[in-house]
Amino acid sequence: MKAIPALDKLFEEVGTYRSSADYAELLLFVKKFRHMAPYNAMLLHVQKPGSTYVASAYDWQSRFDRKPKLGARPLVILRPFGPVAFVYELGDTEGKEFPKELESPFHASGEISKERLETIQRSMYYEGITTDEQDYATAMAGSIQVIDGIGEFNAANASKRFRLIFGMVLNKNMPNASKLATIFHELGHAFCGHLHQPSAKWLPLRYGLTDNEAEFEAESVCWLVCERLGIGNPSAAYLSGYLNKNDEIPNISIDAVLKAVGMIERILSGVNTPKKELIIK
Image (cartoon, rainbow, N blue to C red; front, side):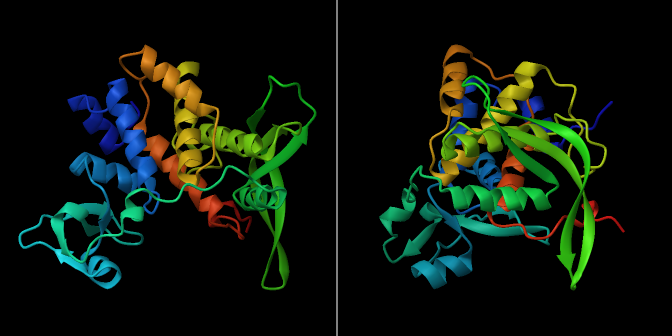
């Protein structure tokens, strides 16, 4: 019997986010908190769904000249390279007036340059993912599959090799924004564990899902990444259509979806060396 992530187990036991309305609310909440890792945004939603803006006590004081109210209860999030950190919601602080524009962060334009797309593809390469473009018809956007290849990178003035584990193909006839949305969708499949790649031991093993479950997860990943970037995406129509027509969502892993979004956003931040797990000794 496969292990169920703790948060998915909690959601399963109490029925949290099973309804389409609750799931839609969670997605919109995670979208809103662009300054925070998606997994941490979900933890905030579990603890305080109506949150407007959160920050540590130090950040409230140093950035906004505000401080937590006496007796305010902190919210718990995960901290990089540590156990947890504590943050406070806007309503639990007092002091100087809060900048209203931060309650509705700037929504970037949907224009994606060729250079930006190429930079992302280079970062994907160091994650062990190759990309290629083919002359496909309109109905075919792209695909991803397991491969067993070898890449090279320079380290300490010497060339080293690393494993290439996924190969992605894109329709070269699409505009750049559509190519990027397709990349996010296909990475959603890979990072949610829908493909059986034994070399990617850091990914979940979830390749037994139904097509409906796998597609719903990949569309959720694509929608969240695009929305947090501020670019339009075809997943919006898929998700809104599904959520409007169905009372409940498929049997998916919210844990896997949010972790996949985090992995994609790491690529977007710039990856210039391979993961240590991929380097060939």
